[in-house]
Picture 1 (cartoon, helix red, strand yellow):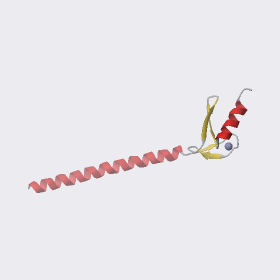
Picture 2 (picture 1 turned 135 degrees about the horizontal axis):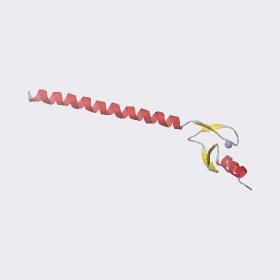
Picture 3 (picture 1 turned 180 degrees about the vertical axis):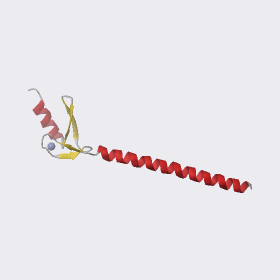
Length: 84
Ligand SMILES: [Zn+2]
């Protein structure tokens, strides 16, 4: 009788753990899709090519955020936009 109770507890515990594991894997999938959304294409305003946001050189010029294919492009763009 005692063994049966332990077995039932073990089964309940097994399902509980399984549910927990499934929940975390679901959350991981959601996080994964969030990172793929983050990896969108952005346009380099200087040479007009599209690059991945995660690989782009980010630069703020006069409070606006721009994305460049390289740091050279970012520098040239900032130089063009400077008042002098
Ligand atoms: Zn460029």
